[in-house]
Length: 199
Image (cartoon, rainbow, N blue to C red; front, side):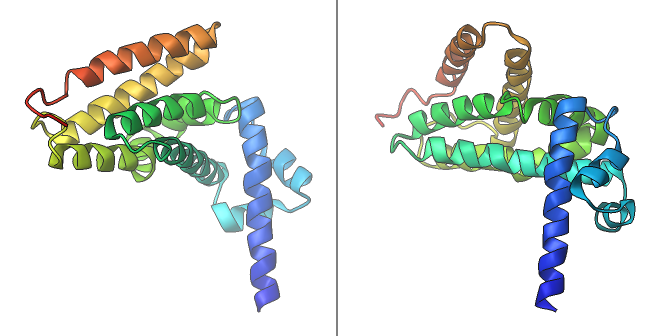
């Protein structure tokens, strides 16, 4: 029984790993399930059994990408004790991780178009947006930001980060675009600081 479970886990891992490479290199539309199963040395039946279809495999691949990005955000933010710096570091880490070549096409381009905005946002909400909401909620409770709606500011900033990530992914001078991005994010975040706080 344990061996069967191990075999199943390995089959799923292989399909996700190979699928991710193909979705990255060829895009969703041009990815062939036949080539994926051949490279993974598995059958189409195994892929259909575990993922249902091509879209099902892509959804799992996208979620694994989003989980990676969230992990980068959390690690970057945890390097500081200052809550504003945590927010800045988390925003920067999100953009850097999102535009990384193994993630950007899956996460920023195919993700919304293949799954639709609602499902894409739901998956985002489980990962990076969740971390952003938690950080902003903590900052509001401690009096660091103005008494605005946490839902509104979370969606506003999350949408801005996704859009600016896409812009960075398409920009030829990535270092300059990242500097410009962080300058704009800093100015935006300044507007939400609670001026009466001495923190």
